[in-house]
Amino acid sequence: MKRLPPLNALKAFAVAAREGSFTHAGEVLHVTQGAISRQVKQLETALGVPLFVRVHQAVELTPAGRELADTLGRLFAEMEVAVNRAAGQHRPEVLTVNAPPTFATRWLAPRLSDFRARFPHIDLSITTDRITTLREARSLDCMVVFDTQAWPRTPCEPVMKERHVMVSSPSLWRASKPPALPGATLLHVLDGGQRLPVWEQWIAQHGPLALDVRPGLTFSTLDQAISAAIAGAGVVIVDEAMVVRELQSGELIRHNTLYVEGPFAYWFVVPSSEPTTPARVHDFKTWLMQKALPD
Image (cartoon, rainbow, N blue to C red; front, side, top):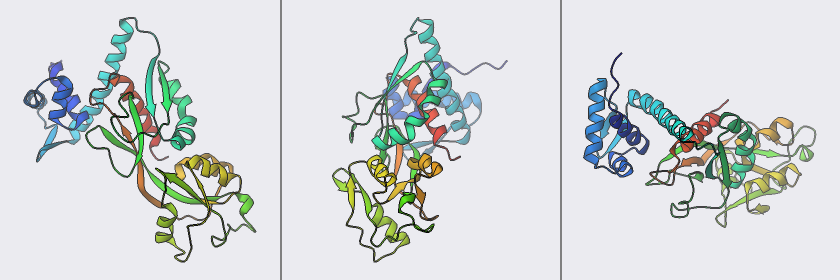
C-alpha cells in the first residue's frame, strides 16, 4: 500500500484550499506563509500533480486540487466528530446560523427535516437579524447573506442567484388571463430603508416601459409581500425559489414565462477564518449547496 503523505501537509493544503490563500492559511494554523507553501509543495511532489495554480499573488485550485480539497474537507470534519464522540462529548452540537428572514422561512425551514435526518447530532440555532459587517457576525458560526457580491476578507461562496418572476393570486385573474399591469396594485419590498428596484429592472428588460411603478404597497420583508400576494392584494415580482410551494399548489400563478436574473444572490459566509466548529460548518455548507442545486 502506498504510504500516505504527512498529515501536516494534508492539513495545510486543506486549509489553504478553504481560505484561497497561503497567507490566510498560515494565520489559521499559526505558521508562516512560507511554511504553508513548503507543505503544499511537499504534497504536490508526493502526489506528482499540481494542486494549485499560482496567479499573481493569489492561488487557484487545479481540478485535481479541487477534488482532493472536497474529500479532505469532509474527512477532517468527520475526524473532528469522531474525536469528540470518543472523548465522550455526546451532547448535541449547536451550530449558529444567520439567514435573511424570507430565505429562512420559505426556503430553509421546509428543508430542515432533511438536515435533521442526516445530521441528528447537530442542533441549528437560526437567527434572522440584519447583519451587514463581520464585526456584527462574530458570534455566528456561519451565515447566508443576501448581497450583490461576495463579502471581502472572509470565506464566501455563492449558494444560488435570484431568478425573479411575476406572480399573483388566481383571485385576480379573469378568463384565464392575469391582471393587466396598468391599474394593478404593485407590491414592493424594502431593503435597508429603500425599495428594492425589482419592478424597475423588470420593466427595463421586459416592459411595458410606460408603466409607472412608483405606486403600490410596500413591505419590510419579501415574505410579507408574498403573503399579501397570496391574499390577492396585488402583483409581485419575486424570487422563484421562495414561492415553489405556492406555485405548485396554485396559490400563486406566474403571469408568463419571462424572468430576470439577479443582481442579488445568496452567499454562504463563514465570518471567522478559524471557525470553532469547522466540522459542523462543513456539514451544513455541503448540505446547503446540495439542496440549492437545480432539480
